[in-house]
Image (cartoon, rainbow, N blue to C red):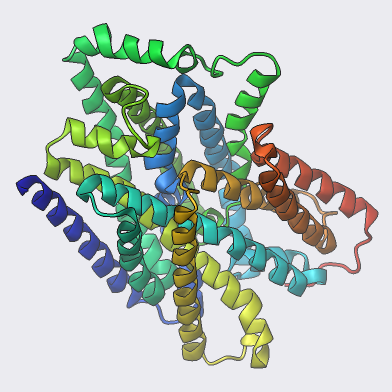
Length: 493
């Protein structure tokens, strides 16, 4: 009972801290631009830590360790794909997107694409924003599900109640402070996450080294029971199957190439070029440490519990921490998973709200949004954020009840539909002058429809849509650019 009390106290203290810190940062929000993009004045360290926290979500603390626990060495390909994508984004795209955001004075991800392709600006705003909001409902839902799982592991409360508590923490400060509150709460969460991903594996290795019976008995028995798949980099697959496994893992690379709006917005919000360089270094270093740690936690779980020791593979991180540390300290480390979920859920909520408010609702309202009173515009943004939070929570409950519970799976679909599609759009917008507005619209619609159809027909088991959506969207973009004429030149800024 005393142990449970310690865990509860630590969790409640953290939640109160996050709400309070987020609300404090929200006091500085005075305009819609502050609410949507923090006035484009983020210091590099804040942008980097926030981007990493938002990018990893419950994926790095629950999804990836769970996949490593379930598949063994095969999950290395996923880590390689993600790390390569993140490094490429920070090294080649972050500073370009920052400069473009300043040049075009944008307040949302879609607004940048629309201003670069002015001949189809309003249609791009509507279509792109609708697609982003649609997919992000499921992404936010995945974070709520992750919160439910983590709180169940910690306090044995029902996952449904855990999802509700997760929502209760993030909604107040996200509604009040918008992007600014989200960024600065993400900074704290990124620090907690990396602490968990470094300290947890180190202690786990020491624990196993001090218990040689795990080497003599548990580990060999676990591997023998699981077969040869755990010890193979390809899950014991060969030929075409081996290629599918490798491509499936590496395909996470494509989603990071500017195609995740919640990450690209961090790039765009950086104060200046000097801060962009500082952010790049911090972002890359954080990533390397985090992915080594996430894989290690999953593999340590195999040694501690065996391949069938956990009913749900995505409980492996909380289970490992509770095994290795005293309850109160384990709670502090498991907060890393809560931090990951909160940092992504709040980022997705504010991004979705900004997209919906700035690119769909305001242009349709009287005065086309631009002439709206600043206080009224800020209030509208907060109302939209509130509604989206409620809808996302409902989506999470429905998904959970339908047993669509795997965070890894949900995030994978979003990475294809959003990441694969918008990476093509951003890359071609930045590097190919012939790419035009009509081609943008066709590419977005094609990428979304392909991902949905590929998923519901069960073809995901044959080849991952994360790679194919990027390929299909890329071919569509090139063909539509050449086959459909551009209607007019780009407008002056």
